[in-house]
Image: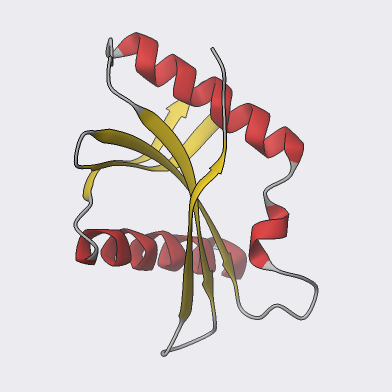
Length: 120
């Protein structure tokens, strides 16, 4: 497996652990709708949370959250809409970003709640 894929997988694992430590229930990992993917789907109290995880070994070339481009946001919103329709979800929802930076412990993890909004 390519090194960037290993870093991404490690970041998703660390992000899910971080969220669970904060009281979230992680419901799904890498949920796909066609070619679109949601890294983590979690629940915080009565809110469904769609989470995009961005992992970087360092931030030499910019902040990790800057990698969440407008096109990525559109894809996440589209995949989330498919999830909501497929499972007939009728609860509040939001989109969060979790960034994981570092090559080894201690990793720097940042959680951006309600990072962007969708209207459907």
